[in-house]
Image (cartoon, rainbow, N blue to C red):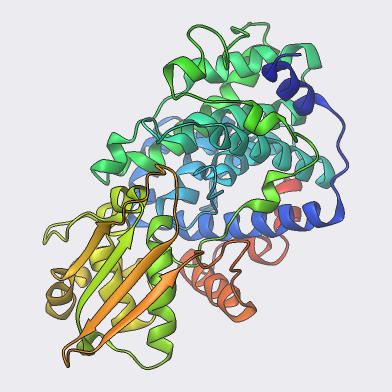
Length: 433
């Protein structure tokens, strides 16, 4: 049996999630919707919604901002909202924000058909996240394409196919069309462009569209992972045996990390340590210099220099501004990323002295270990070795930290947000009001 066949068999199989996997899926669904509700009220999302409105309102699917749109447009907007604040969960080993694409697509599909069975929704979510993460885990080199979108669309299409009742023999067509629509490169990340969440959005919409086309009778190519012009040849080299060797026995959704801070995941090792140092009494005025020695992925993703005219999208991926913010406020508040708040003189002064240096690690996908060195104005040096990022399975957030994230998300989402997003997320997704 080919690896592609094994993945398709997994996608079509009946699954009863183990208790812990179900609990993890529910926890991550809540985290994803909370961050998405906050993102749906951002300045960037308001701009996007003007184009969604231009598509024409429809009764089918809900936006996390409260309005409705046709299912593909809803998937597009919600995928953007979930990722635009850089607050969405990530499988660190895969380097895939799998929940973002899959949740947006699943929610649109459920709304399209007027509601869904909660357990079927959780199973579809877990299957989709598994496949998207599995493609990332199969990668044998660093990203050239934006993996959350290219791997995410494949997982999302399989999740949507389950909820749409697609016959098992048609899943290969849905995977093939999803692959045909796959797009999104790392150039957007290099430039810290708002195109990053737009690539997530496009993947969620493409998953919905792929399944709708198959249901309408269209076919797609079948050997899209291992074929001569498939994923492994054109998008990035993959060894699917890394994933399929324990397919179905290890649920990848249980490996997904939650992001405590609304910033690139590669910043969280340093920010987690700075958060603790802030709690211990260290303040912005005390610090003269911050040096982070890290693997190439960390430098590549958040080692960009401070810029006086940086956009919100750039700032979320810039440790040089994130570190001073943490030491000044003890929090990374997305509300400060629009306007002039990021350009305060006390932030800029330290930002010029924050650096991310390569540590010699040859692994292009590694996020750890890292070494953080802080020098104060008095000449004292504090050094921290970072083995795990806060919010990972190895270093979970405390109950208080998780509650603080939810509280800030709820505040940013505003009083008109559906309370079920925060209080009963599965009911929110499953029930079409």
